[in-house]
Image: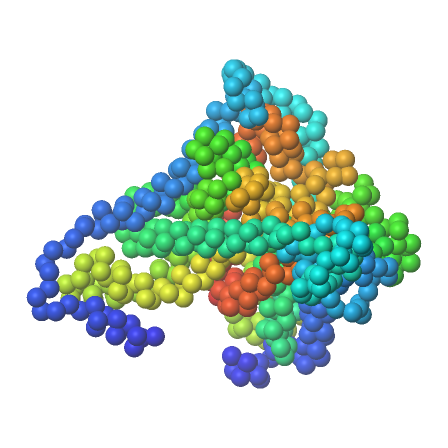
Length: 315
Length: 316
């Protein structure tokens, strides 16, 4: 690597009659390099955001563009905060986020802790475990519908085989009490490796000598785990939790394909409600207001995330 | 490393290693079953795919792949007999079900859309991201932290919330259901990842190389081109693969903003239906073809994975 660099530097050394012209100043170059990205984000992210803020104060409907647009003030926001369906959607989202994070953190950390034992072939099996999280949640979520089919679906078959419940009565997607768990299972299957990978980095960042010192002090394994392993891996676990929290708060693709929010609205998470309001009922103004509320909530989480990220980096 | 800790008092014992290994292998095998099932289903005939109990041993068939790439119409046996000999395996299989191939399905154009949009947006995002990352890494940019946070925060917007105004904007601009519109959108989403990842990679390249080149008379731009870029190749490649995977897997924007000509594979695959419901072998075949590139990339990326999924926050 150093040799290659040296060669590059040598190649970069100009002929004796080098141009004296320095070209653009550093400051100019900095803006030349950064501004295209900023402009693109302004055009594709920020301008639409301001448009959505404007729409959120109106009764605009995207399927009736020629109708006169009325300014409603904060009426949309008031209606959302008093809307029973929105609160149910927020509860559904909270239930989904809580259980997926809890399961993924517990299983993910346990897996990382076991992999950290460095048994033979651990690298291969780790890579294999990581595969589900790289796949498209939409395409794989769609296939889980097949696995969940009563009787013919592999998942239902295995559950009925193990538990003895008749296979026709395992209706993961159409049973009101099972449907919320069907999306939690798929999400946990897909994203536990994500938490595992981050926890593994945390465990590997703990220096060996700390354990050696604890061993000299005759600290029990139990004590070592609670006083060394867990506290030192905690910033990493937090990072994983925040990432998963933000992602699952916005969850749309997997749920949309697996249950579409059904049966009824038992799995209707916030993004699904938003889509139904915006692209099925075409209440553009109303759904824009809901989108803004969601965005503010996620932005709050993002702020916490960046602070946690800096903490991890400072270690 | 294992050598230096071989006599360490804290090395895990052989039996604890064995137990850990057994649990991990069991988890890996169970978690991979749904993927193996997709692969197996893609080689089943439609009746085999919905058999009870689910068939683990079956006669492999490529009927799913035939159905994936074609559309078929039901015909009377007399009509089918009046046709000439079957022209290929797919033709023959389809005729056995009293159907004839009516034409190609939409899968191939949708798959090509996925390729064009994923590669196009990845190229743009990595191009813009490399320039910005270099800018943030090497120059004193006023409000750099705020700008970087702004770039990252665009990633935290719920896709549906962004899709509402984008839908209206694209309708005004004539970008609805066009590959260009999707490339622009995915570039905007991916550029935040690209900037954050590449800034990390470029930060790791010592400034001394460029400074040496500049003392020798090169301009900043030439120094960037000749010394920084060649050093950052690994980082750029890893970033490109992460952008590619995101654009390839993306569903929410594609489902809401495209409907025909620019539709990508993820919203298309769930719509593959046969007679009397979803044609699961064809869906499995489409899913298999769609997932294989990602599997290859995951294996290529395994060393950079951690960095990519945490926006460069955790580096090993």
